[in-house]
Length: 111
Image (cartoon, rainbow, N blue to C red):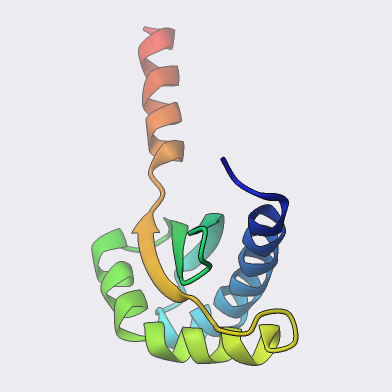
């Protein structure tokens, strides 16, 4: 069960990471459209699982680039949230394939 503090931090991180990806995606990720669909922090706020939805490019290569630039992303996040959190959580990035799953179910239902 998530506490209210975790929920607030999830929303804060999702908003700030979304802005970082929107601003940095043309330079770092070869113009791939990356959206942050969900963020889940652990109870001790040390790890944040970030779920990304990637459009326009090969997801594997974009995820490699995201992992490669994760320290830079974390640094930019730290500069944005330095007044709200004492420590910047470690970022773990995952591909959010829920949209593909929903599309697959819709295609199956149409048949």
